[in-house]
Length: 263
Image (cartoon, rainbow, N blue to C red; front, side):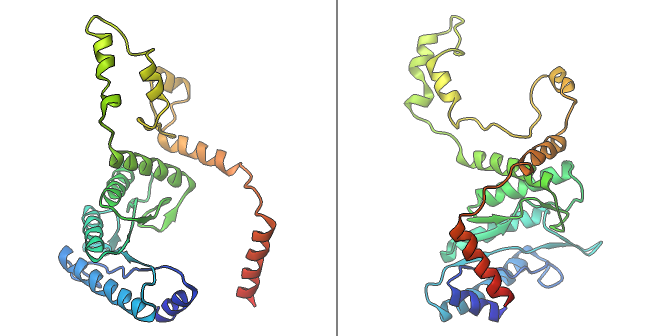
């Protein structure tokens, strides 16, 4: 690890110091003890990097796991790991470093309700806490499994979390007092007003890509697809798109890097 650190510093590559202690196994079982050990190890790495190259760009990174002491399983989707995601971001802000964590995470091996609630909770808390770099989209089963469908669903979860974090603007235009007075209480409609049409095309509302919405009869007529089925169809659509070729100069540069690595 020290050799990798030196190589990264010499190459000018930003470094995330990621200790990954495991509660009750390689760290104290208490959350405060887990965070303390992660903090000690992370700060020691950050200090060494700054000694090698003062001002070198770094991230305060967090990827601890809690432990199911009944089975020995390392857990990344537990509510306790999500509490630590918030605390880790607070520590990073205290020291003045940008911060990293992992999310959306789940320990389940299936695309089901547990997967959804663990991933949504972990991702929302990671974003709302102010983490700058969040990784693990597409992964589940404690990060041991990946799928294209999960990646699509995680993109949806992330978009919802970012929308929640953003909130909404309150000003004269959005409060629409004049429009409310114009329509009045006499049974008018907002459906065809310019205000509705204008905001209809804004980012006021998030439009999901794989969510099931609309009347039951319409859903049945479409084959009654669940979210996983919609994600699979979306993944197939994206995989069918041919990526544009690299520019010749970039392709040549990439080939030189590969040749140097092999040589």
